[in-house]
Image 1: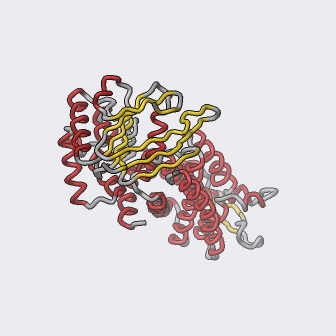
Image 2: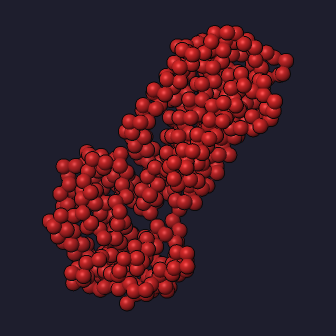
Length: 254
Length: 201
Protein backbone atom coordinates (compact mmCIF):
# COMPACT_ATOMS: atom_id res chain seq x y z
CA UNK A 1 0.00 0.00 0.00
CA UNK A 2 1.25 3.45 -0.85
CA UNK A 3 -0.07 6.75 0.47
CA UNK A 4 0.99 8.51 -2.71
CA UNK A 5 -1.06 6.18 -4.86
CA UNK A 6 -4.09 6.58 -2.60
CA UNK A 7 -3.77 10.36 -2.98
CA UNK A 8 -3.51 10.04 -6.78
CA UNK A 9 -6.61 7.82 -6.85
CA UNK A 10 -8.45 10.17 -4.49
CA UNK A 11 -7.71 13.21 -6.64
CA UNK A 12 -8.88 11.36 -9.76
CA UNK A 13 -12.09 10.11 -8.11
CA UNK A 14 -12.95 13.62 -6.89
CA UNK A 15 -12.27 15.09 -10.35
CA UNK A 16 -14.53 12.49 -11.96
CA UNK A 17 -17.23 13.07 -9.39
CA UNK A 18 -17.37 16.83 -9.66
CA UNK A 19 -17.10 16.85 -13.46
CA UNK A 20 -20.49 15.18 -13.60
CA UNK A 21 -22.91 18.07 -13.74
CA UNK A 22 -25.71 16.01 -12.26
CA UNK A 23 -23.67 15.49 -9.08
CA UNK A 24 -23.18 19.20 -8.50
CA UNK A 25 -26.79 19.98 -9.32
CA UNK A 26 -28.08 17.21 -7.05
CA UNK A 27 -25.89 18.10 -4.10
CA UNK A 28 -26.43 21.85 -4.34
CA UNK A 29 -30.03 22.13 -5.50
CA UNK A 30 -31.99 19.18 -4.11
CA UNK A 31 -31.61 20.12 -0.41
CA UNK A 32 -32.76 23.67 -1.21
CA UNK A 33 -35.78 22.32 -3.08
CA UNK A 34 -36.70 19.90 -0.28
CA UNK A 35 -36.47 22.56 2.41
CA UNK A 36 -38.23 25.23 0.35
CA UNK A 37 -41.16 22.90 -0.33
CA UNK A 38 -41.45 22.20 3.42
CA UNK A 39 -41.21 25.90 4.21
CA UNK A 40 -44.00 26.66 1.76
CA UNK A 41 -46.31 23.82 2.73
CA UNK A 42 -45.88 22.85 6.39
CA UNK A 43 -48.06 24.51 9.00
CA UNK A 44 -46.73 26.51 11.95
CA UNK A 45 -49.01 24.69 14.36
CA UNK A 46 -47.23 23.65 17.55
CA UNK A 47 -47.18 19.91 18.11
CA UNK A 48 -46.20 17.73 21.02
CA UNK A 49 -44.01 14.74 20.24
CA UNK A 50 -41.58 12.28 21.79
CA UNK A 51 -38.18 11.17 20.60
CA UNK A 52 -37.83 7.41 20.78
CA UNK A 53 -34.25 7.49 22.01
CA UNK A 54 -35.09 9.79 24.94
CA UNK A 55 -37.06 8.92 28.06
CA UNK A 56 -40.70 8.24 27.22
CA UNK A 57 -41.83 10.97 29.63
CA UNK A 58 -39.92 13.64 27.76
CA UNK A 59 -42.13 15.56 25.37
CA UNK A 60 -40.93 18.20 22.95
CA UNK A 61 -42.93 21.13 21.68
CA UNK A 62 -42.09 22.41 18.22
CA UNK A 63 -43.90 23.74 15.20
CA UNK A 64 -44.83 21.19 12.58
CA UNK A 65 -42.72 23.19 10.15
CA UNK A 66 -39.57 23.03 12.33
CA UNK A 67 -39.91 19.27 12.81
CA UNK A 68 -40.50 18.76 9.10
CA UNK A 69 -37.53 20.91 8.13
CA UNK A 70 -35.16 18.95 10.36
CA UNK A 71 -36.63 15.65 9.25
CA UNK A 72 -36.38 16.52 5.55
CA UNK A 73 -32.81 17.72 5.92
CA UNK A 74 -32.04 14.19 7.16
CA UNK A 75 -34.02 12.72 4.24
CA UNK A 76 -32.16 14.80 1.65
CA UNK A 77 -28.79 13.80 3.09
CA UNK A 78 -29.66 10.11 3.20
CA UNK A 79 -31.07 10.00 -0.32
CA UNK A 80 -28.28 11.93 -2.02
CA UNK A 81 -25.39 10.27 -0.27
CA UNK A 82 -26.66 6.74 -0.86
CA UNK A 83 -26.88 7.41 -4.61
CA UNK A 84 -23.38 8.80 -4.52
CA UNK A 85 -22.05 5.77 -2.66
CA UNK A 86 -23.70 3.44 -5.15
CA UNK A 87 -22.21 5.37 -8.07
CA UNK A 88 -18.73 5.21 -6.60
CA UNK A 89 -18.89 1.43 -6.62
CA UNK A 90 -20.74 0.92 -9.90
CA UNK A 91 -19.38 3.48 -12.33
CA UNK A 92 -16.16 2.62 -14.18
CA UNK A 93 -15.81 -0.72 -12.43
CA UNK A 94 -14.12 -2.24 -15.50
CA UNK A 95 -11.59 0.57 -15.65
CA UNK A 96 -10.86 0.24 -11.94
CA UNK A 97 -10.22 -3.42 -12.58
CA UNK A 98 -7.77 -2.45 -15.30
CA UNK A 99 -5.97 -0.25 -12.77
CA UNK A 100 -5.71 -3.27 -10.48
CA UNK A 101 -4.31 -5.37 -13.33
CA UNK A 102 -1.75 -2.62 -13.92
CA UNK A 103 -0.61 -2.70 -10.31
CA UNK A 104 -3.03 -0.82 -8.06
CA UNK A 105 -3.90 -2.65 -4.87
CA UNK A 106 -7.72 -2.95 -4.57
CA UNK A 107 -7.39 -1.73 -0.98
CA UNK A 108 -5.78 1.52 -2.22
CA UNK A 109 -8.74 2.11 -4.53
CA UNK A 110 -11.12 1.26 -1.71
CA UNK A 111 -9.48 3.75 0.62
CA UNK A 112 -9.56 6.44 -2.05
CA UNK A 113 -13.28 5.82 -2.72
CA UNK A 114 -14.07 5.83 0.98
CA UNK A 115 -12.15 9.05 1.67
CA UNK A 116 -13.86 10.79 -1.24
CA UNK A 117 -17.25 9.63 0.03
CA UNK A 118 -16.48 10.88 3.54
CA UNK A 119 -15.32 14.25 2.18
CA UNK A 120 -18.52 14.66 0.21
CA UNK A 121 -20.63 13.55 3.19
CA UNK A 122 -19.01 16.08 5.47
CA UNK A 123 -19.31 18.90 2.91
CA UNK A 124 -22.96 18.01 2.38
CA UNK A 125 -23.64 17.96 6.12
CA UNK A 126 -22.02 21.38 6.61
CA UNK A 127 -23.88 22.79 3.60
CA UNK A 128 -27.28 21.47 4.74
CA UNK A 129 -26.52 22.42 8.35
CA UNK A 130 -25.86 26.02 7.34
CA UNK A 131 -28.80 25.99 4.97
CA UNK A 132 -31.26 24.86 7.65
CA UNK A 133 -30.24 27.86 9.74
CA UNK A 134 -31.73 30.07 7.06
CA UNK A 135 -35.11 28.45 7.75
CA UNK A 136 -35.05 27.78 11.52
CA UNK A 137 -32.59 28.22 14.38
CA UNK A 138 -30.94 24.98 15.47
CA UNK A 139 -29.94 24.58 19.13
CA UNK A 140 -26.57 22.85 18.67
CA UNK A 141 -25.44 23.38 15.12
CA UNK A 142 -22.18 21.45 15.36
CA UNK A 143 -23.90 18.37 16.84
CA UNK A 144 -26.66 18.65 14.28
CA UNK A 145 -24.04 18.69 11.50
CA UNK A 146 -22.44 15.62 13.07
CA UNK A 147 -25.89 13.97 13.07
CA UNK A 148 -26.30 14.74 9.36
CA UNK A 149 -22.77 13.43 8.72
CA UNK A 150 -23.77 10.19 10.44
CA UNK A 151 -26.88 9.84 8.28
CA UNK A 152 -24.54 10.38 5.34
CA UNK A 153 -22.15 7.79 6.70
CA UNK A 154 -24.82 5.11 7.27
CA UNK A 155 -26.60 5.73 3.97
CA UNK A 156 -23.39 6.34 2.03
CA UNK A 157 -22.13 2.95 3.20
CA UNK A 158 -25.50 1.41 2.32
CA UNK A 159 -25.01 2.89 -1.18
CA UNK A 160 -21.51 1.39 -1.31
CA UNK A 161 -22.95 -1.98 -0.36
CA UNK A 162 -25.67 -1.84 -3.01
CA UNK A 163 -23.17 -0.62 -5.61
CA UNK A 164 -20.76 -3.44 -4.86
CA UNK A 165 -23.51 -6.09 -4.75
CA UNK A 166 -25.67 -5.07 -7.70
CA UNK A 167 -24.33 -4.64 -11.20
CA UNK A 168 -27.39 -3.07 -12.82
CA UNK A 169 -27.94 0.63 -12.27
CA UNK A 170 -31.72 0.39 -12.30
CA UNK A 171 -31.82 -2.45 -9.78
CA UNK A 172 -29.42 -0.49 -7.55
CA UNK A 173 -31.52 2.66 -7.72
CA UNK A 174 -34.61 0.60 -6.89
CA UNK A 175 -33.01 -0.84 -3.75
CA UNK A 176 -31.78 2.58 -2.65
CA UNK A 177 -35.16 4.23 -3.19
CA UNK A 178 -36.94 1.34 -1.49
CA UNK A 179 -35.05 1.57 1.80
CA UNK A 180 -34.41 5.30 1.80
CA UNK A 181 -38.04 6.05 1.07
CA UNK A 182 -39.39 3.80 3.80
CA UNK A 183 -36.75 4.56 6.39
CA UNK A 184 -35.22 8.03 6.19
CA UNK A 185 -38.06 9.37 4.06
CA UNK A 186 -40.98 8.19 6.19
CA UNK A 187 -40.66 6.01 9.30
CA UNK A 188 -38.03 8.16 11.03
CA UNK A 189 -40.31 11.18 10.98
CA UNK A 190 -40.97 11.85 14.70
CA UNK A 191 -44.49 12.95 13.89
CA UNK A 192 -45.11 9.47 12.49
CA UNK A 193 -43.30 7.14 14.84
CA UNK A 194 -44.44 8.92 18.02
CA UNK A 195 -47.84 7.44 17.32
CA UNK A 196 -46.72 4.22 15.66
CA UNK A 197 -48.15 0.96 17.05
CA UNK A 198 -44.85 -0.82 16.78
CA UNK A 199 -41.70 1.24 16.77
CA UNK A 200 -39.40 -1.74 17.37
CA UNK A 201 -38.96 -2.17 13.61
CA UNK A 202 -38.26 1.53 13.25
CA UNK A 203 -35.48 1.31 15.85
CA UNK A 204 -33.60 -1.27 13.81
CA UNK A 205 -33.68 0.60 10.52
CA UNK A 206 -30.42 2.28 9.40
CA UNK A 207 -31.55 5.89 9.73
CA UNK A 208 -32.92 5.52 13.27
CA UNK A 209 -29.82 6.36 15.31
CA UNK A 210 -28.35 9.10 13.08
CA UNK A 211 -31.69 10.88 12.64
CA UNK A 212 -32.26 10.68 16.40
CA UNK A 213 -28.88 12.28 17.00
CA UNK A 214 -29.62 15.06 14.48
CA UNK A 215 -33.09 15.77 15.90
CA UNK A 216 -31.86 15.69 19.51
CA UNK A 217 -29.12 18.20 18.61
CA UNK A 218 -31.56 20.43 16.74
CA UNK A 219 -34.23 20.67 19.46
CA UNK A 220 -32.83 19.65 22.86
CA UNK A 221 -29.90 19.83 25.26
CA UNK A 222 -29.92 16.07 25.79
CA UNK A 223 -26.96 13.97 24.79
CA UNK A 224 -27.15 12.04 21.58
CA UNK A 225 -23.82 10.29 22.19
CA UNK A 226 -25.33 6.82 22.33
CA UNK A 227 -27.18 7.35 19.05
CA UNK A 228 -24.00 8.67 17.45
CA UNK A 229 -22.03 5.64 18.58
CA UNK A 230 -24.67 3.21 17.30
CA UNK A 231 -24.79 5.08 13.97
CA UNK A 232 -21.06 4.56 13.48
CA UNK A 233 -21.49 0.89 14.33
CA UNK A 234 -24.41 0.44 11.92
CA UNK A 235 -22.66 2.24 9.06
CA UNK A 236 -19.46 0.29 9.66
CA UNK A 237 -21.27 -3.02 9.17
CA UNK A 238 -22.43 -1.81 5.73
CA UNK A 239 -18.94 -0.50 5.04
CA UNK A 240 -17.14 -3.74 5.92
CA UNK A 241 -19.55 -5.83 3.86
CA UNK A 242 -19.23 -3.55 0.85
CA UNK A 243 -15.43 -3.46 1.10
CA UNK A 244 -15.21 -7.25 1.26
CA UNK A 245 -17.41 -7.64 -1.81
CA UNK A 246 -15.54 -4.92 -3.73
CA UNK A 247 -12.16 -6.41 -2.82
CA UNK A 248 -13.26 -9.85 -3.92
CA UNK A 249 -14.46 -8.47 -7.25
CA UNK A 250 -11.32 -6.44 -7.88
CA UNK A 251 -8.52 -8.74 -6.83
CA UNK A 252 -6.56 -10.55 -9.50
CA UNK A 253 -7.66 -14.16 -9.73
CA UNK A 254 -4.78 -16.35 -10.79
CA UNK B 1 16.03 -15.65 -26.12
CA UNK B 2 14.44 -15.89 -22.66
CA UNK B 3 11.13 -17.45 -21.83
CA UNK B 4 8.68 -14.72 -20.84
CA UNK B 5 5.42 -16.65 -20.51
CA UNK B 6 4.55 -20.24 -19.75
CA UNK B 7 0.93 -21.37 -20.04
CA UNK B 8 0.19 -24.87 -18.80
CA UNK B 9 -3.03 -26.84 -19.24
CA UNK B 10 -5.41 -23.88 -19.12
CA UNK B 11 -9.09 -24.77 -19.33
CA UNK B 12 -12.11 -22.57 -19.04
CA UNK B 13 -15.82 -23.29 -19.41
CA UNK B 14 -18.88 -21.09 -19.54
CA UNK B 15 -21.71 -23.23 -18.26
CA UNK B 16 -21.50 -26.52 -20.14
CA UNK B 17 -19.56 -24.95 -23.00
CA UNK B 18 -15.86 -25.69 -22.69
CA UNK B 19 -14.12 -22.80 -24.45
CA UNK B 20 -10.50 -23.61 -23.68
CA UNK B 21 -9.27 -27.18 -23.34
CA UNK B 22 -5.87 -27.82 -21.79
CA UNK B 23 -4.08 -25.00 -23.58
CA UNK B 24 -0.31 -25.02 -23.15
CA UNK B 25 2.32 -22.88 -24.83
CA UNK B 26 5.38 -20.79 -24.13
CA UNK B 27 6.50 -17.39 -25.33
CA UNK B 28 10.03 -16.13 -25.70
CA UNK B 29 11.38 -12.62 -25.70
CA UNK B 30 11.82 -10.80 -29.01
CA UNK B 31 9.13 -12.87 -30.69
CA UNK B 32 5.81 -11.71 -32.08
CA UNK B 33 2.97 -14.19 -31.68
CA UNK B 34 -0.49 -14.05 -33.18
CA UNK B 35 -3.67 -15.83 -32.12
CA UNK B 36 -6.28 -16.39 -34.79
CA UNK B 37 -9.60 -18.16 -34.64
CA UNK B 38 -13.28 -17.79 -35.41
CA UNK B 39 -15.62 -15.59 -33.45
CA UNK B 40 -16.31 -17.18 -30.09
CA UNK B 41 -13.31 -19.50 -30.34
CA UNK B 42 -11.97 -18.22 -27.01
CA UNK B 43 -9.18 -15.88 -28.14
CA UNK B 44 -10.20 -13.02 -25.88
CA UNK B 45 -10.91 -15.44 -23.03
CA UNK B 46 -7.38 -16.78 -23.26
CA UNK B 47 -5.92 -13.28 -23.27
CA UNK B 48 -8.02 -12.22 -20.31
CA UNK B 49 -6.81 -15.24 -18.36
CA UNK B 50 -3.17 -14.51 -19.20
CA UNK B 51 -3.62 -10.84 -18.24
CA UNK B 52 -5.22 -11.84 -14.92
CA UNK B 53 -8.63 -10.39 -15.65
CA UNK B 54 -10.33 -13.79 -15.49
CA UNK B 55 -9.50 -16.97 -13.68
CA UNK B 56 -8.95 -20.28 -15.44
CA UNK B 57 -10.87 -23.31 -14.21
CA UNK B 58 -7.59 -25.18 -14.16
CA UNK B 59 -3.98 -24.80 -15.22
CA UNK B 60 -1.23 -22.35 -14.40
CA UNK B 61 0.44 -19.31 -15.88
CA UNK B 62 3.89 -17.97 -15.09
CA UNK B 63 5.17 -14.66 -16.37
CA UNK B 64 8.72 -13.38 -16.11
CA UNK B 65 8.47 -9.61 -16.34
CA UNK B 66 5.98 -6.79 -16.66
CA UNK B 67 2.73 -7.29 -18.55
CA UNK B 68 1.11 -4.66 -20.73
CA UNK B 69 -2.50 -5.48 -21.59
CA UNK B 70 -4.59 -3.68 -24.17
CA UNK B 71 -8.20 -4.89 -24.00
CA UNK B 72 -10.37 -5.04 -27.10
CA UNK B 73 -12.83 -2.48 -25.79
CA UNK B 74 -11.28 0.80 -24.61
CA UNK B 75 -11.31 0.79 -20.83
CA UNK B 76 -11.00 4.46 -19.92
CA UNK B 77 -12.56 6.91 -17.47
CA UNK B 78 -14.96 9.07 -19.47
CA UNK B 79 -14.51 12.09 -17.16
CA UNK B 80 -10.71 12.15 -17.08
CA UNK B 81 -8.41 13.73 -19.65
CA UNK B 82 -5.71 11.96 -21.66
CA UNK B 83 -2.97 13.40 -19.41
CA UNK B 84 -4.82 12.36 -16.28
CA UNK B 85 -5.05 8.81 -17.59
CA UNK B 86 -1.31 8.67 -18.09
CA UNK B 87 -0.79 9.99 -14.56
CA UNK B 88 -3.28 7.56 -13.01
CA UNK B 89 -1.92 4.49 -14.80
CA UNK B 90 1.69 5.56 -14.20
CA UNK B 91 0.82 5.51 -10.52
CA UNK B 92 -0.53 1.96 -10.95
CA UNK B 93 2.67 0.90 -12.75
CA UNK B 94 4.78 2.65 -10.10
CA UNK B 95 6.65 4.77 -12.65
CA UNK B 96 8.52 7.88 -11.55
CA UNK B 97 7.11 11.24 -12.66
CA UNK B 98 9.91 12.17 -15.04
CA UNK B 99 9.73 8.73 -16.65
CA UNK B 100 5.99 8.64 -17.34
CA UNK B 101 5.91 12.22 -18.57
CA UNK B 102 8.64 11.48 -21.10
CA UNK B 103 7.04 8.16 -22.10
CA UNK B 104 3.54 9.61 -22.49
CA UNK B 105 4.82 12.52 -24.59
CA UNK B 106 6.68 10.11 -26.83
CA UNK B 107 3.56 7.91 -27.24
CA UNK B 108 1.30 10.91 -27.91
CA UNK B 109 3.72 12.13 -30.57
CA UNK B 110 4.18 8.72 -32.13
CA UNK B 111 0.46 7.97 -32.38
CA UNK B 112 -0.36 11.58 -33.12
CA UNK B 113 -2.83 12.54 -30.41
CA UNK B 114 -0.89 15.11 -28.38
CA UNK B 115 -3.43 17.80 -29.36
CA UNK B 116 -6.06 15.99 -27.26
CA UNK B 117 -4.03 15.69 -24.07
CA UNK B 118 -6.27 18.09 -22.11
CA UNK B 119 -9.51 16.68 -23.52
CA UNK B 120 -11.84 14.47 -21.54
CA UNK B 121 -12.33 10.98 -22.95
CA UNK B 122 -16.05 11.60 -23.45
CA UNK B 123 -15.10 14.24 -26.06
CA UNK B 124 -12.71 12.03 -28.03
CA UNK B 125 -13.37 9.94 -31.15
CA UNK B 126 -13.31 6.14 -30.91
CA UNK B 127 -9.98 6.04 -32.76
CA UNK B 128 -8.29 8.47 -30.38
CA UNK B 129 -9.68 6.58 -27.40
CA UNK B 130 -8.17 3.43 -28.85
CA UNK B 131 -4.80 5.15 -29.27
CA UNK B 132 -4.85 6.00 -25.57
CA UNK B 133 -6.09 2.50 -24.69
CA UNK B 134 -3.04 1.09 -26.47
CA UNK B 135 -0.65 3.72 -25.12
CA UNK B 136 -1.60 2.84 -21.54
CA UNK B 137 -0.50 -0.74 -22.21
CA UNK B 138 2.81 0.57 -23.57
CA UNK B 139 3.49 3.18 -20.90
CA UNK B 140 5.75 1.05 -18.69
CA UNK B 141 7.69 -0.66 -21.52
CA UNK B 142 6.32 -4.14 -20.83
CA UNK B 143 8.26 -7.36 -21.31
CA UNK B 144 5.08 -9.10 -22.39
CA UNK B 145 2.56 -7.16 -24.42
CA UNK B 146 -0.92 -8.67 -24.73
CA UNK B 147 -3.07 -7.05 -27.38
CA UNK B 148 -6.68 -7.92 -28.12
CA UNK B 149 -7.33 -6.49 -31.58
CA UNK B 150 -5.69 -3.24 -30.56
CA UNK B 151 -6.16 -1.38 -33.84
CA UNK B 152 -9.98 -1.33 -34.02
CA UNK B 153 -10.89 2.16 -35.16
CA UNK B 154 -7.37 3.10 -36.28
CA UNK B 155 -6.90 4.89 -39.58
CA UNK B 156 -4.40 3.39 -42.05
CA UNK B 157 -1.53 5.62 -40.96
CA UNK B 158 -1.98 4.76 -37.27
CA UNK B 159 -2.43 1.09 -38.14
CA UNK B 160 0.97 1.10 -39.88
CA UNK B 161 2.50 3.01 -37.00
CA UNK B 162 1.17 0.40 -34.60
CA UNK B 163 3.01 -2.36 -36.47
CA UNK B 164 6.16 -0.26 -36.65
CA UNK B 165 6.00 0.28 -32.89
CA UNK B 166 5.33 -3.41 -32.24
CA UNK B 167 8.39 -4.27 -34.39
CA UNK B 168 10.47 -1.80 -32.40
CA UNK B 169 9.37 -3.39 -29.11
CA UNK B 170 10.24 -6.83 -30.40
CA UNK B 171 13.72 -5.59 -31.29
CA UNK B 172 14.08 -4.29 -27.73
CA UNK B 173 13.29 -7.75 -26.35
CA UNK B 174 9.55 -7.70 -25.63
CA UNK B 175 7.33 -10.66 -26.42
CA UNK B 176 4.08 -9.64 -28.13
CA UNK B 177 0.87 -11.64 -28.25
CA UNK B 178 -1.83 -10.26 -30.52
CA UNK B 179 -5.33 -11.48 -31.23
CA UNK B 180 -6.35 -10.84 -34.81
CA UNK B 181 -9.15 -11.68 -37.22
CA UNK B 182 -7.27 -10.62 -40.32
CA UNK B 183 -5.66 -13.42 -42.33
CA UNK B 184 -3.56 -10.78 -44.12
CA UNK B 185 -1.77 -10.06 -40.85
CA UNK B 186 -0.48 -13.60 -40.43
CA UNK B 187 2.77 -12.68 -42.18
CA UNK B 188 3.53 -10.07 -39.56
CA UNK B 189 3.94 -12.69 -36.82
CA UNK B 190 6.88 -14.94 -36.10
CA UNK B 191 4.49 -17.59 -34.89
CA UNK B 192 0.73 -17.97 -35.21
CA UNK B 193 -1.52 -20.00 -32.92
CA UNK B 194 -4.81 -21.11 -34.39
CA UNK B 195 -7.49 -21.61 -31.75
CA UNK B 196 -9.85 -24.32 -32.98
CA UNK B 197 -12.51 -25.97 -30.84
CA UNK B 198 -10.69 -24.98 -27.66
CA UNK B 199 -7.30 -26.32 -28.75
CA UNK B 200 -4.25 -24.48 -30.05
CA UNK B 201 -2.97 -25.59 -33.42
